Every structure is written in structure tokens, then in C-alpha cells.
Length: 205
Image (cartoon, rainbow, N blue to C red; front, side, top):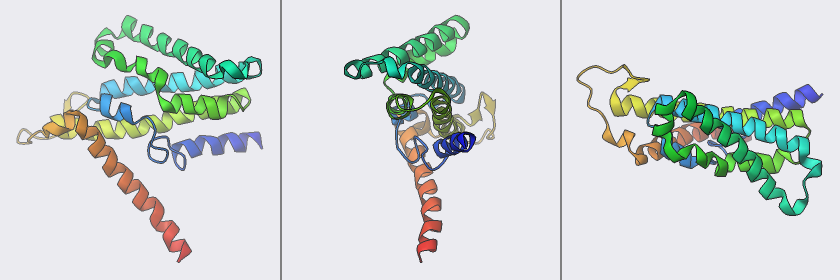
């Protein structure tokens, strides 16, 4: 029974309760880092690490946290995880760390991380909390990677530095600028909502 619940929790964060498509959380990252696929992947891995381990850590100590300082403890734990990610990037991937700049630190205030620690980590045993944090990060990540692939392809004609479109392709400058992220996200949400609501409307009819 527990395995079934954990699997349902995992699937919900990928689809029916996707942090971006359904809950519309973490939109700042869509604007900030999705113009280059490589940077987006690094950011996504950092967020998966943070959401999963923050949920696990807070679940383990949830019964020892005084209610009055609940939020402060959450931020402290999340900040520790983000500092680990930031130090790792600076040590092993300094170029990517410089390109991401302050956006790694902003994972601390990402509403996906805060929301799942508040709603799940403080009310669930460690394993479901870990599954929830990991799946929420994965659900966030695949959406951002799709957006990044579209933006980099249309904006530069390449993906991951590999030229895909021919020499006659005219780059869409808007795709490498901030508005391009919201434009692509809006198209994706429109497609997902349209496909998701159409079967429900047919079933009601």
C-alpha cells in the first residue's frame, strides 16, 4: 500500500500536479535560465538535489521543530542544500557558475521548494517526503528543459552548442531574451491545458 501511495505521489508531480503546468510555480526560473540548455540542466539538477534532500531532512526532524520557528528552520535547511550546490559548481564548473550568477542562490526562495517542504516534508514520513521532493524537482525540470530546447533552437539555431538548423536560418532574437521564456511557457501551458481539458469535456458530454 505504501509503495502504491509513493508511486501515485511520484506520478502526480510529473503530471496532474506538475509544479509549472498545473500549479504555475517557479516561473522566475523560466525567465532566468532557459535560454541555454546546458545552464538549464545544471539549474534543474541543483533544484532536484535541493527539493529531495530538504524534504528528507525536514521530515526527519519534523517532530523536533517548534511551530514558532518552522519557517526559519525550513529556510535554513534549504539554504544549506543550496550552498552545497553553489560550492560544487564553483569548484568543478566555474564557467557555468559564473553564467548562472545569483540564480543558484535564488533556489532558496523558489516557491516549489518552500511549498513542498511546508505541505509534505513537515507532515509526512521520510520516504514519502523524499519521493515528493524528488518528483517535484523532476516535474519542474523536464518542463524547463523542453522550454530551453525550444528557446535555444529558435534563438541560435543550435541545441547544446550543436548546430541543428541550416545556415539560412534567421535567429529569433526574442527567444534569447527574457520575454521568450514566458512566450514559450504560455504556448506549452495552452497545449497541455487544451489536451487535458478536452477529454474531460467529452466525458461530461
